[in-house]
Image (cartoon, rainbow, N blue to C red):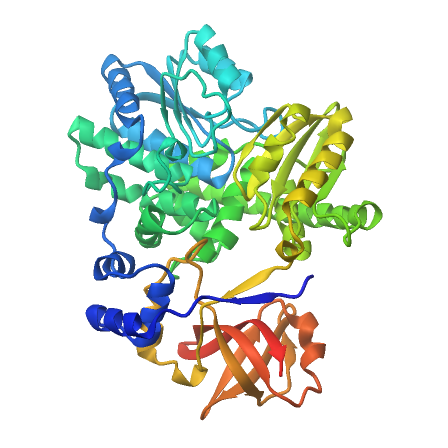
Length: 568
């Protein structure tokens, strides 16, 4: 692992800090944090620290919304059979469950469909369209897919089915000839809805439908639990619209009336606990994803849609078992991938990793690619080969746009799609070597040496001795945390360790350090391998940390979560 490079956020002007602190009745350190996040007016600060659902933008600001809503209204009036066609990840599953339930409540003749990852792959497929024909479907609404389905939508038209697209992925060179498209990526740059996850787009569509049909929009708020799940799991920027939806959605998960979500929280051990984006990302999302990764994601849609407690319990336990199997596959695939890296990748020269194997499970290669990016800080493409075709999942680093890189290789690919940080593609088996060479060349051209050093963004220098209950209360208002709104990281310079470092749990580094008159517990999760740097060190350390309240057996105390340290 490359050493971390500490990058300090520019220090705001002291006078501006004082003015904002006074205007918003916050402390100077909190005012500095707000300014560093470009929250520089009382109105922006209010919307950030104390948002309301009234702060959401008008759903009709999304280009194309009028046409899509009009066509669905006709389908409702004419009792046309509709199909919500989603994707097999958490964002796609929650989008599908949300639109299915909303349309069902509005009286639609509606069904849903999720493609089988292992057979059909991502997106609208001829097999899925054929299924729609057999079900007597007249109108398909795609969610979390469709924006690049040019050939598939033409195929649907020939089969007598009209298609509406509600997506959030990057468009291709040609837009599909759908009868209506909503996608924030088609709005002007800088739009408030720029970064919506697919489930956010689905929620805005539901809002627009309710407004057009004169329904009580507050009825939709029960589905904010689904919006928080999909938005957090898709790792989109948690700013603006996404942050508001997720903040209220986390509260809705805690009090959800959905039997499936309750059962899922129960098997995951989250009942009675405050919900955070971290718990979604590391606890709930893997279980929802497990069904799709191993084949049939429709079970997850049933889980999130059912009103039957028994059905919910059965599916939740099945997903728990699927998730255990998925973890085993993860570990096996990771071991094989690391061996292949040893044999085929020059980590001193290559600026990207491309791996391929006929033995890999399509459902877990994205997870393993993410682990390899964490370990080596290089864009990583993993290709699972079956017969004459390879299907890939790719993950990236901040300085490298995967979607653009795939575009530079598109003459070698059968299909591709995704985002800057996560993308997928299909390729003929014989073209994999040529793709690997091209992709690595693109990475070499676009990545500079400093891009390959992972950075740690430091918000400010802050002596832990100055941490107060009031400061911690204010800091909690910055939640929910995620991309572009990460937990603030502070640096405490020249701390004295007051306890011999030791390992606890599964390789967690633990020690105590003195700040002023306070002795504080410090814990570095997963940092056990660095204990040798501290043992025998008699000097001081600069500590990069996140202040946290740790509750254990009813007692709450302050601890410092270690992100990095440097010996002084």
